[in-house]
Length: 179
Image (cartoon, rainbow, N blue to C red; front, side, top):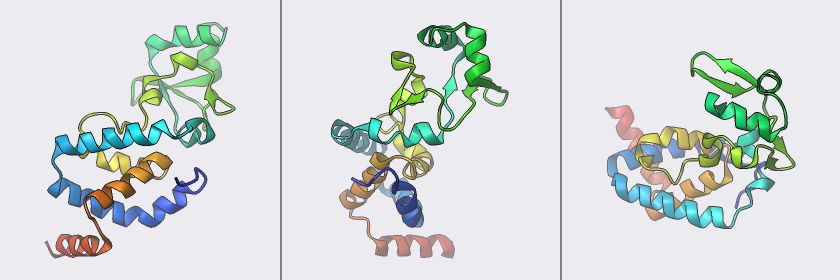
């Protein structure tokens, strides 16, 4: 498995290949079968990976904290709601929700989330590779491959499963440019 501190650089080297693979999947993959492949790889890879040794997602993204979670999150940290909001959150008008103020996340402590079982849903579900409709979210997964070693590995394994090679990439790119 690729090391967490190497994933951004390695993914950058694979970026054009990953975009070509996305085009290939859009044109050739069965959506339900692709979902099953992602679920299988998700289960397999996460079963043997210790996310607490990485936490790139916590270091690079700002989490959304739903308004209905503020009270229980504040209680988890033993502080009043208003203090919790002022200390850790800012309101994002575009998303109509609170987001964490900082990167890395203020709730990250020694590889664990101090919110424990109250961790935001989007954090619990990240990188969404076991969720339905992966064919329609491949762009966000390509971005996640720059952050998460598991997603990077999934793309590499899927390329092998689909027998996707650099020659395929070149043909696809020529076809796109020619159209």
